[in-house]
Length: 347
Ligand code: 13P
Image 1 (tube, rainbow, N blue to C red):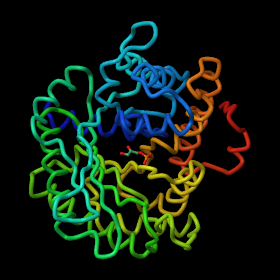
Image 2: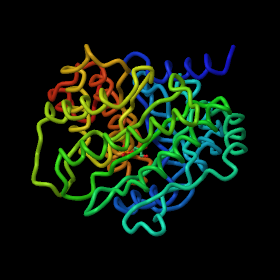
Image 3: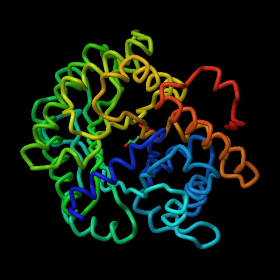
């Protein structure tokens, strides 16, 4: 089997049927920050317990096709000693791995960021492949503000995303290419449309120049939204229209899948907006369109768990509920009534 076929097959499996991805690849710092907010001790053992709760959620594989892990997590085991990777595989969930080493301030460009992690990437990918990972993720951060983003920042991030993607394909992993235009700020929906369009053009241009096989990758973009401090409150329909029209202009039809980040949107809105895109544009989209949320799937569960064993079952039900709602959204079948089932989701 050629590498291209394999990459295509993995991408197709990740995007199949009613399924989406679960991002559970928060770096140690990010995970600790989320733990701190809800009063959970910020230790390696608590991070392991939390990931144990997630991967052992009964039924998760009904809605989730792939889970993105962090370096610490991919090497850890559940309470009974079984590696997390094996538990995921047993449940039909493909393990993936975050391979960027974080976004740092871009020297000379105040307020902008560049993502690190290309050095030694080829060797690291070989190691992750041997641990069972079949896809990877790299996140670039683009911020909207006065005079930013600069063309240089967009270009530098597009270039590193393309270099990363090529390394992945060489190693037999499907690259998830994540150029995130973040929601911070008070910019308009129109401004986000303009910047996201610019960024996606730059990214696909760089991918082409670096000879990345577009059929063996997945795009993980932001939805097109006004900044979180903006007074604009667009309807789900307006968000769907702005987002899909932007993608139709910029994302080649050969890309097999698009899987959204949630970016800090309230969980229910993230479901409603994904659903609306399918309702309004299901017939014209050339790519599969799904979710790859972290906060919008995990946050309610984390708030219930609070680090306490007696809350594990209820937290798992909350996690499954959000996964199920987003799965319904991928089919254009999500309804607000599903939320009134509360955390005790049953199918
Ligand atoms: P959020 O859904 O919380 O934005 O996280 C997705 C992700 O993987 C960010 O890199």
